[in-house]
Amino acid sequence: MKIALGVSGGIAAYKAAEIVRLLQDRDVRVQVIMTAAAQEFVRPLTFAALSGEKVITGMFGSAAEQPNLDSAVEHISVAQSIDCLLVAPATADVLAKFAQGIANDFLSTLYLATTAPVVVAPAMNVNMWEHPATQANLETLRRRGVTIVEPDSGYLACGMIGAGRLAGPEQIVAATLERLGVAQDLAGETVLITAGPTHEPIDPVRYLSNRSSGRMGYALAEAALRRGAKVILVSGPTALQPPAAAETIFVETAQQMRTAVLDRWEQASFIIMAAAVADYHVKNVSPEKIKRKAALELQLEPNPDILADLGSLRHATGKRSPILIGFAAETGDLLENARSKLSKKRVDAIVVNDVARAGIGFDNDRNEVTIVIPTDIIAVPEAGKLEIAQKILEAAIRIRQQPLAPP
Ligand code: CTP
Image (tube, rainbow, N blue to C red; front, side):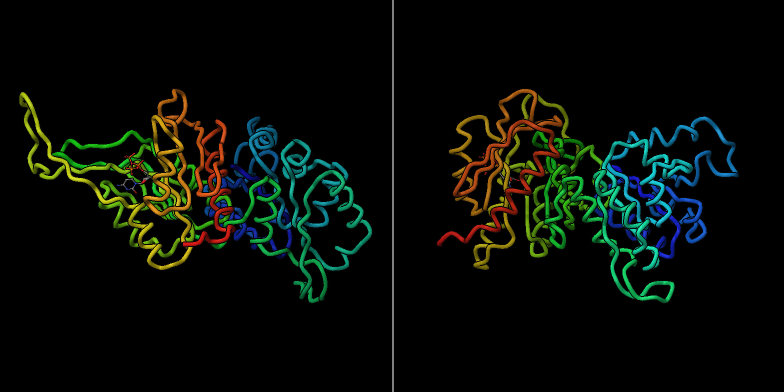
């Protein structure tokens, strides 16, 4: 997800730095656009360093750069690549330009060129805010579908008291994501997710493992971040890049995964075990590389069942928290197997994958799952893994709202 953040000139321009950080915490890429007036208040370098992206400061590149065609049409490419245009702070001047369709700098041109949703968070002097011209412009924008995050009342930089202070960065970010259909219902929660396979060594160069790309677990991490959660991602070996905003702990073996999870489980309000944990490890791992021979016998010992251990630990507390969700990869008797895992492991839900089906699941961006909870079965039709992840999180939140089943 990518959001263009327009920063216009006002004392509150510095608060946009916090908005960049909060969006990044939710795994959103931010492209900052500064008006000329904004650059009088904050240096573009601040936003470049925070966002990790070039800051757009004008229609034709900066004075130091050679103007070129690329920068002259950049407003069109940015307009097409963003999921949302957020302007915070939005001055009276920017609101007037947007309302009238005046396109004489990058930000106002971008507003006309984009079809993405637009959110504005105004900040200005109280008299400017209350002026009929500003209110008429706001009404025009509102009618056009622009989301307006109303300013707060209080002491203003100009010394006056009244409405005009930029709304809080959290509130602006929440309103923006909600406008994009991403509920902020996990704000303040910690979600622990396991992902990927585990590797159980045989010798220094070989291991036993399960088929798993880690994509479902990583999608869950991304989805939970978007909803405002703090995410702890315990990841087995994968080729994926974890979301920067997640606290990621890399592990190799089931035993290491267990230690990482048990060290942190009490911090979490939701635990989702999407990892394909190897059920066995090799009893006598060879310190030397095993040479090829006619036949090789490996003695396997069962690994601890991390999810079942969590189920028992939670049961001992007598509490409903954290909500525990497991996955099951099945090739037959899906619901029956899921129900049996649900009660055996004492968890709140099992997300079942039919791994016998081609084109979804393993090494694929798409999936189709059934979420089995003690009182219901939720079929989630085929979709991208991020969308499936959102459905799993919705189910998790719903489970927590349900009354506790009698023991
Ligand atoms: N799991 C775990 N620790 C293990 C094995 C599995 O925490 N040692 C978790 C997985 O992350 C998953 C769930 O348990 O969320 C179900 O795993 P699965 O391997 O399907 O279940 P098993 O009980 O091992 O049953 P099966 O006989 O089908 O392998």
